[in-house]
Length: 138
Image 1 (cartoon, rainbow, N blue to C red):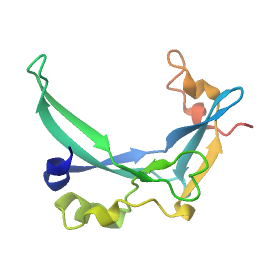
Image 2 (image 1 turned 135 degrees about the vertical axis):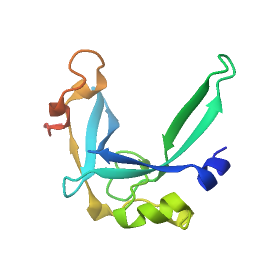
Image 3 (image 1 turned 45 degrees about the horizontal axis):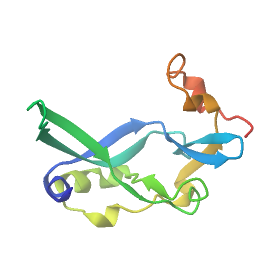
Image 4 (image 1 turned 60 degrees about the horizontal axis):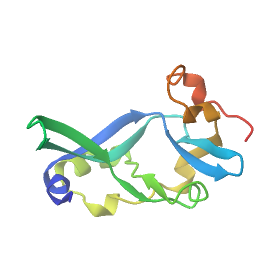
């Protein structure tokens, strides 16, 4: 499905402060925020493509973040995680010099995880609030 994009349309989703994953508990889903251990931005390996919407015939440009197995640190929360690229791998990823060997879990010591407000599960008012990533007691 992504063979052509893997060969020709690689990208990097840059400047993510982190991402959310959820654990289902008896009283509902508890979100966790996963970020770089140094507080810096994460850069995810991605693919992009341009395709024609069969219903509207409109040309659409879209992208996807590549996921891989979770590392040991995040596996208790979810079995997958985005592929986090190191800056030193950007050029090789984008120009195709590196391939599937970069699509591995991040080292355990590169990420940190903490529980956050269940407001993350709600859409609407307040869903663009930076405090959503603040640690709470789970």
